[in-house]
Amino acid sequence: MNDALPHDSNDSASFESHFRDPADAASHPLAWALGQRQGVLEALRGLFSGPQAGVQLRLWCFLELASQPQGRLSRDDVNRLFHMLVPDSLETALKRLRELDLLVWDATAQDYHLSPLAQQVHGLLATLTSPPQGDAADEMADLLAQVAGAQQLGLVNANHLKHLHAQLARLHDEFAEAIASGSEARLRLAQPRFDRALQLVDRAGQALTALIRAEHVDPRLEREARAIGQAQARLLAMASQFTRALQQADRQRVTLGSTGLTTSDVRAWLQRHPALYELMGEALSTPVRPVMVSQHDLVDVAEGEFERDRPHAGQASGLPPPAEAASGTLDTLSLPAELGGLITLLGRWHAEAPEGERPLADAILGGRFAQAAYRMQLMPLVGDAQAQTLKGQTGDLARAPWQWAFSPRHQTTTDEAVALISEGVISPLPVDDTPTP
Image (cartoon, rainbow, N blue to C red; front, top):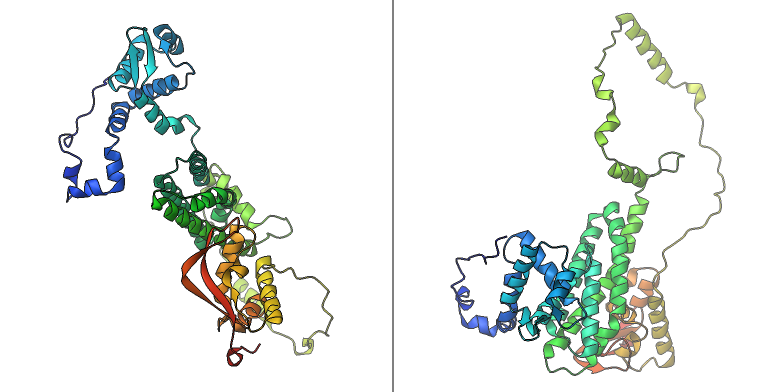
C-alpha cells in the first residue's frame, strides 16, 4: 500500500498567491475561516490521499476508533477491535493516524487516545456513517436538524443557514422544472418528494422564528434567517401550481376502451419491461408478400365502392328530436379558505367604519406562516383593474372598496408565526374612485 502523500505542482505556492489581489484572501469571510483551520485541512488531506482502498481503510479505522465508548484503548483492545485486518495493513493505518496527530500513543500508560483535532475531524466526517441518501428532501432534513440543534445550543452560524438556503433554492428549481415539463412521469416521481419538502418546511418555522427574534452578535444570522423564510414562502406558494399540473396531466390521460387501462398504465408497463425489442417477436422475420389482382377485379371493386358511397335521396332525414339532458354534478376546485376570509373581513370593516383606516397587519396576520404569506400575496389584487373583470372570489377581492400601501419600515408583532411585518395601511377608496361591480 502506497501511503506517500501525492505531490502537487502548486504545493509550494501559498493560498494567497492564487488570488489576483492577495488581500482578498484575508477579507473574504469564508477564505479567512478556512485559513484558521489549517490543522483540520492537513488532517483531511492526509486521510484522503493515496489509493481508494487505502483511503477507505484509514477512514474506517478512524471512524471505528472514534465510535468507541472508552476514552483510552490499549494495544490489545485495538487488536481485538480490528482482529479481521491483516497486521501490516492495520499498522500502516495506525501509523498514518499518528502522523496526522489524530491518534496519540501514550508511552507512559501504554494506550491510545484521540486528540482534540480528531474530535473536530470526526464532527466533519460523522455523516459518512449514515446510509447514503439520494433524495434532496432528506438532505434538507439533515440540514434542518443541524440548524435546529445548533439553535437550541446557541451554536448556529451563518454558514449553516446559507447551506439550507441553497438547498431550498435547488429544490424550488427542481420542482419548477418538473411543473414546466408537463410530464406526468416527472410529476408523479416528484410528488412524494414535494410533499416531504412541504412537511419539513412547515416544521422548520419554529426554529427560524426563534433565530429571527433572538439577539445575535452577527447580523448575518438574521439576514440569512429572513432569506430562508422567503425561500420557504416560495416553496409553499408552489403547492397550488403543482396541484394544477397534476390535474392537467390527469385530464390528458386516455382510457383504452372498456379494459380500464390508461395510457399511464401502458407507459409504466413499457418503462418496467426489461427488453422492449422482444415485443416484436417474429414480426420482422416475415417478408412482405404482394397480392396480384386482375384488372376486372379492380373495376368490380371500384364500382361497388362507388355505388355504396353514393347517398340516396330518399334516405335523407332531419335532426333528431330534442331531448332533456340528464341530471349530473360538476365538481369544481375550491379556492383556499384564506381568500374568502379576507373578502369577509374587508366587507365587515366597510360595514363597521367605511371611512376609517386599518393597519395592514390586521388583515395579514393569523394562523401559520404559510397562511399569512398567502394573504400577503393576495393584497396586490385589491384594486387591480384587470382582476375586477373576473368572476368569483378573485374578482370580489379586486372590487373591494379599499386601497393599501406599504412603507419602507418594519414593525414587530405578537404573532407566533411572524416576527416582523412591513408597515402599511388599508384605507377606503374615495367615493369617486369606488369601482362599480
